[in-house]
Image (cartoon, rainbow, N blue to C red; front, side, top):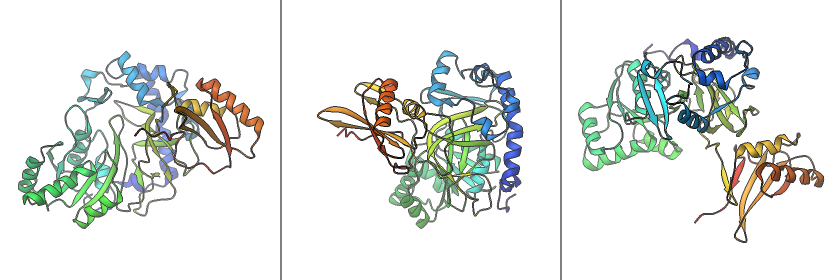
Length: 413
C-alpha cells in the first residue's frame, strides 16, 4: 500500500457500484440501530428499514440535529440512547462543548481517519506531530488513530506550550504536522525566532478551522504541503482533500446529503445547503445527522482518481437562528412559510434596523410581482413567526446561492 496512489480499491469504484453497495447495507444499519438503541427506536418509530434502500427513501427519514442531541442526552445520559454499545462497553468516552458526550468503540482506526491522512501523502514511517487536543474532546484521538493505523509514530503534543513543542520538534524531527491551520504558522514563526529547527515538517493535515488560500500558499513556499480534513466528534471523518486540491472527497464510510437549511429536503446539485451525514458505525450509528455546516456538491470526478462525491468544503454554518424584536426566528420557520406557497424558489429573511426598531423582509423568488401572493406570504410569515414583516417578490435566480435562509444585516458596533 505504501506506494499505491490510493488507500484501497474502494476509492476508485464505479460510482453506481458504490451507491448500490452502500444502499444495500443501509437497511441493515437502520434495523440494527432500531433494535439496539432506544433513542433510534423512538426517532425512527414506524420506519420500515427494508424500504430505505435509495437516496430518495433516505431523504424521507427525519434528521437528527446536534442541538436536539444535546437536549436528548440531558434527558437520557450519556448518549441519549443512540449508541448500540453500553457506556461500560466502549473504549473511551468524550465530552465535547455543549456538553455533548461521544463514545469511541474498540478496534483500529475507529474514526476512519487513515484514508484521509493517506490522501494527504502521509505514509508508514512518518513521525506525526499531533496538536489536536487529547483532553476530554476526541479531536486528538481521531487523527492519532488514523496515523497509527498507517504505521506512523505519533507525538501526542496537544495544543499550547509552544516552546516545549518546538523542542520536541527539534529533537524528534517529525515529518507531519496535524492540527488547526493557524497553529502551524505559530510553530514555524516561533521556531525561526528562537532558532529552533522545524524544517523536518514537510506535510500537514489540518482541520477545525478555515485554511485560507494565502496561508496554504505561505506553507507551500515554506516547503510544507497542506491538506484539509473535515470531521466531527459525532461522525469521525466526513471528507478530505487529496493532491488534486479540487474540493473534498467524501469518505467511503458515510453517505452525505446536502439539504435545505431548516429542512431535511435535498437541494439541487451545486446548491449550497446543510451537510447531513449517515455513518456506518457499529457502536454509534448516525442516520441523517445534521451537522449544521454548509457546503455544496462539486460535480464530476476528482483528477486524483477517487470517484466518490466531492463537496466544496466548509462554506459556513446553517444554524441562522436570529432574535428579532425580542423573539427567536429559526430557519425552520422560514422554510415552513415557503412550504405554504408552492412555486417559490429560494427565500431569504433579511433582518435590519430602521428608526431604532428591528425590521424583517422576506425576499422570495417567484415569477411576477403578484400583490395577492405578497399578501398571502406576509400572512403566513406573521402566522408562523408571530411577527409582522414585509414581503418582496424577486426574480427567480436573483437570491445568492450561499445557503442563507436568514440574513442579519444589523450592525452591532
